[in-house]
Image (cartoon, rainbow, N blue to C red; front, side, top):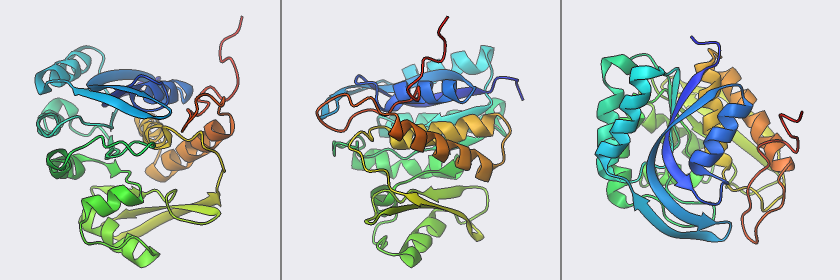
Length: 271
């Protein structure tokens, strides 16, 4: 384990800087890690929505991963927007190679942007299965959980548990179900593995429209913690606290779903 955890982020670029690679880099840096990237797609987006998506070829994504692994090394991997089914399969093949054996993988199965724009087609979602099996933890929100487990009910805790456990048939992959899309003043996130429920976090909802990138930030924060050697529950706890602090510190930019305040309202370096 390196003194500064090296986190490889495999995700898409958000031109508005609120989510995607941009949010991931900020989060990993703020939590003491070194962020490295393999960009899967370029998007044109702002707080109002996504106006264009251009996936990169699978060979370009793998070349970025190879460059990082061969020289800098990797302590944890975070996967976000995957771009295409071809990239999903290629990344799964690459993660299964010996030089990444034992490296914790956090998979955020990004499908829909906060604005409602679709970021993964049916073929790409169908290709998520191998990435799920390779992941240490996956972090779906309630709509993503419903898409990953067709026919499952996510309207109550029993349905959520059943759907999550169907994605984690063995203890190798944990599932953190994010509860932000559920109604109510309390947001509850639940962690499951093949043995059932492990942990649960509940906090008052922070009322704000500036919540773009919460999922990216949470999953990157977890990866930074795992890369630093934190136990899974502790890594999640720290990442959740950071997300909440960043929501409170949102600068208020944009006319729609604005970015959070990843720097927490401070200048981390100010001579």
